[in-house]
Image 1 (cartoon, helix red, strand yellow):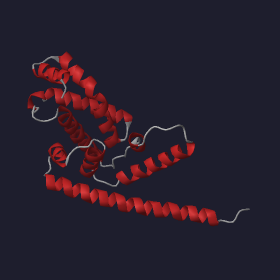
Image 2: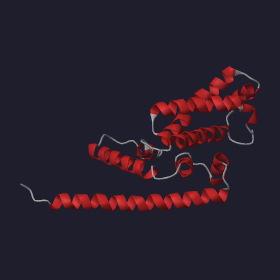
Image 3: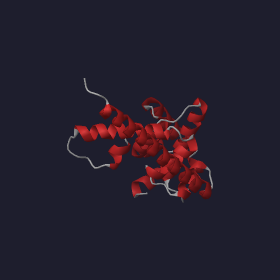
Image 4: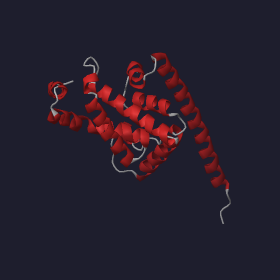
Length: 197
């Protein structure tokens, strides 16, 4: 943590609301993005981000300074989003910006953009098949680069349980991706074979 963040955190621990507002401003984007990835709805993500910061403020005395503040904050967000999904008993929607985050920005290319959108939609459908904790583990690992130990602390799991969840989820996603790719290829083949009138 850089010096201003350390100072803001120390002042926040002493009850300085302005210092905590600086922390909120600093971390609002990563918290919102995590909530959006897990909930799939902009308005729900905004509510979840606000709730995350409120809970962090209420429980700031429980923060362990040996731990990264952003890791602690994202753990609160992940738990809240998992709880929200469990309450709704519905699948979690996937990441809309998956490829935009991982691919370099290039000149406008309509074909690439169309392909990108199709892949985002496919990934959204695949991630919907994972349960809330598996989804959280995948998001924290591959979009936030959390270590297995950090994920374990964030989700209150053992490190071996995290490894197992990540392994199973990757296998399931890879298998499902192949199945969907085969279906798409079959549909395209049928369209190519259709007689033209």
